[in-house]
Image (cartoon, rainbow, N blue to C red; front, top):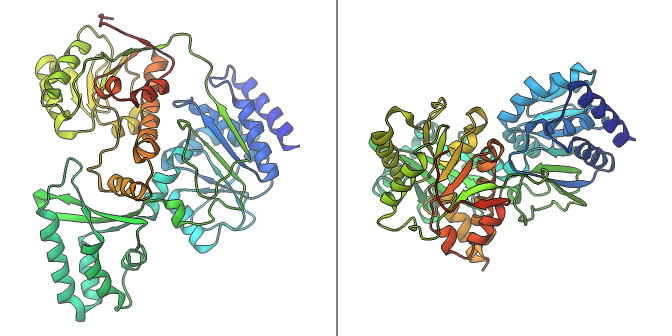
Length: 477
């Protein structure tokens, strides 16, 4: 049976490599093998920040399975698979040939797909009834949303005018009208401006009666309706903008992607998780790390300023100065508001000198690194483990982002609790992943956002950080 073969093979491999850094290899291997053999839908929850060696438990059953399978990976995971994990399998005689690209022969056992390739394969019907293995389940919807999205830049407008010379004047007029409106609006810290359906309507009406259209205009024309949203990425200094259009729910745009198909979904999520369309797991297992002996020290005083308070910047600077003093290791300060973050970086640099940097990939050993939450989550695997993490504000997505605002508006229209169903669970997931390195390094976490203690949902944030111990006062380490 596949489960027994995978168990024995993985046990042999782990014994050959020495002590394992992740305790659930064999359990994960049996779960994946069972799901592949039965064509089940299986959900495996991992602890945020789990050691990436857990991939072995996923790959060994794939190497022994004879039926065609599609493995969905991000670019970073693809690189790790090809450069680290597959050579480890080959060293013990396990062959796992991978077919890559937007199409694959029916005889290919393992089809290694990135998200844009999955979209192309789904549109062409190339996936057929292949089982789907998704080792980064928490990235499924964001990366599918990007893969399905349409981006229109200045050259695309010029190409459209050249292709349709009879409508060139009308297209130019519509472009100029949109440009004036978008560049006149405040664009917020992310330099994004929402584009409403009414503003799109004149261009849609014009292009609907013209043909043929050059790429990517047909895709833009087809991506209409309430399930999509548009925004402009603005560069005010150059008076330029780039048009983005993405679906609110990518799995609703790709109906039946997960239905009537064996699916193995692995990833760290806070519970409960919003259900994915078409995914109804028959097996759902949580493989969390064993309880930590040393809880995470948490500095979060009760009486702190709220992020929208006028004195919050001075509160943030005072607390960061106290937290950095006496620390011999790396301090990471996380803050999404770019203006506030750059001001804080400058103020800390005036106090601590060249130790302070902004989004540096090579910080000093006793440095102070100021960065956004997204930047830290993207780069933390390649950076030294910090001795303390300072959360200036909690990683709750801002409604100034047009995509977030559109997703919230869709839930609000349905009468649902958009904060607790959307913003809070996503923030908890980001927070748990961000603190995983500090937890492993025996460091501490400071939360300088007054909402943690003053809002009712702050209890859920504290529960997501368990186990932790309150740090009532600061002491040099």
